[in-house]
Length: 275
Image (cartoon, rainbow, N blue to C red; front, side):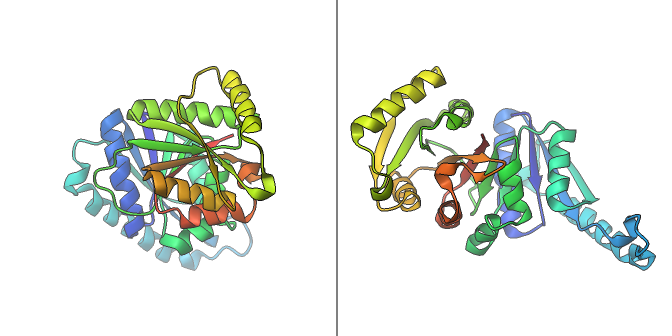
């Protein structure tokens, strides 16, 4: 991981994300791209309704953003880390994706505004689009952690073939972090499988993966999301990983309200890997 993108609205939660991004940057000797996106004013468009009167207001917010950048860059935490800041007029989702492609970003670290913010994340907001469509891992941060160390990393999977690449990426990340990696399969009444069926699927999955998984657990619960939340709380893990699908939102394993409830109620950081 050489380039980390941190979108910011200068909120408290965005600062939490930046603090963790700085810790990762120091571990990987990476650069941080700190990006603030302002809504595109009509006067910057080409349409006949462009309002040139909005220019002073737009320039004011641009100057204000750079002033906030100056204050952030003076923080002791950011010493010895290369920060490349930018404030641009761009749609939030489009701007983030443009930066990922333009600067060949390796990962995104984003803050979440608590339960409401996480709920918005999965009901069509710009952040939801980033998580769903990003080709690079997205780490969603919900609280402050000035000593972000990952000892236990759990990846929830349905053992389908489309999860192989996300798990491969997650394994690589766990190795870099020197974390214990564990796969978990949630077995529920309405999608019940016998232990033998699940283990057969697991063995096929590992064969396709091309590497061994020493830590695999079948966890029984009433629903998938409740099972994942109960499991990560029971194991006291530092990080939850899941796969995402650009066309269907999260992987079909986490469909509909499952994905929303899962990330909405997870108190720990969540990292997503594109399928």
